[in-house]
Length: 287
Image 1 (cartoon, one colour):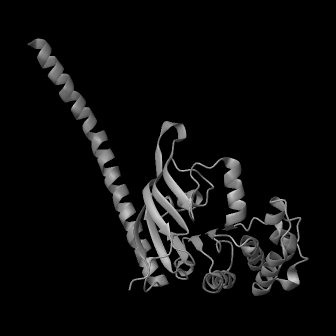
Image 2 (cartoon, helix red, strand yellow; image 1 turned 120 degrees about the horizontal axis):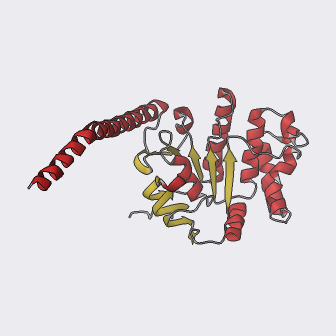
Image 3 (cartoon, one colour; image 1 turned 90 degrees about the vertical axis):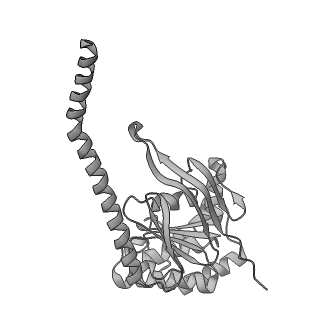
């Protein structure tokens, strides 16, 4: 007897995102369909400019797609009003950023409780117990009265993770969460995220350029030119991830070289083509 796969915690269906700076269309996402499984750590990787950050922003409701649909759980978020999106992000989605994004004038405790303040409510007894357990798990008990400038970078990122988990979000998005940390602090943060998945059932989507960070994931999705091109689900290691990224970079460079060659050929043959056209016109006139 086969077991049905759990419903995705987030979905993209035929999603495209096109930016149009100065009338020059830039395709950041190109008809992407992707399912994010619950209670798993999914890493998204790709060369610079591949669309991985845009993918996360569209999934998280921080940006709207040009076409296609986005779901968080069973709810389609594509056509939500801005105030509805804000409420959804506040209550059902957690965020962890590279720059921590803590409020410097608030204490660690106040930063962790900030989502409730923004939602104009206080945590109930169950939520307070949950927050207390998260604070203990992250080793922040002795730092609750400190301000961000008084604690280390690793402790600041732990505070950001505690804030993201405080509301028990359906899904947590992390954008280069170890980018501003030293190696040891980065490993501690990734161990915490892995624990949140294994022991708390948290769903996490992580964008990173670091193969060592991505190796903590249960699944690694590689994106190039705005489209998922491959993924790893088994035997995930930093070495395999790094080799895949090198292959993608080589393919991107080859494509750029080919495009540059076509452009150079066009520029070199343009005068010849113009001369041929002028000759043809002159010949018709003489006739």
